[in-house]
Image 1 (cartoon, rainbow, N blue to C red):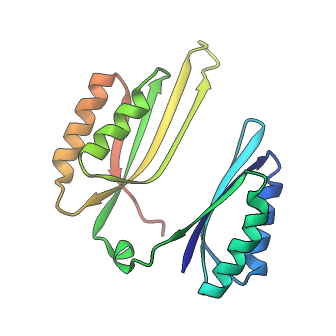
Image 2: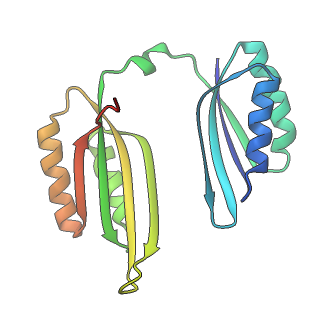
Image 3: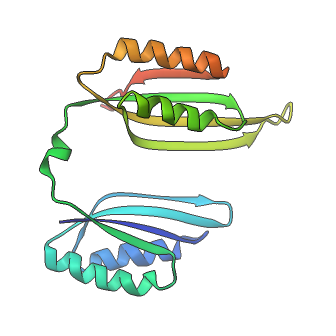
Length: 176
């Protein structure tokens, strides 16, 4: 059985630490975990796996933390096919001047093509030499095997040209 837990807390990650400690106390296992600091706070999520009784204990423990309004959890359905999808993993990296709509247009493009997002990161910063605001977008994409990657790449680069952004679209390279 699996559970997704999200936590939003102080910039030192104390709440996230309490969640991870609770996972261990309830004899569950962390399958995937991410935490990041954002301005004055931190946000994280954990995918947890365990027996039904261990997950139930963890849900009870998290319910106490959830009263603060900063911890949420959701039980995942048991669907063994979701892990076995035949997909290709590709990465799309985009650099653009910060302006409204770029992120939304890119997400909409991939969604409209039936492409799933595995991971999405976006950050904006000010360039030191000219003061312009730059936005970097990193997307890890799940491309179904029936989708033509060559056509998708061409369409993606076309939309990036229309949006006047710089982009890279390439397969994930294994780390050896």
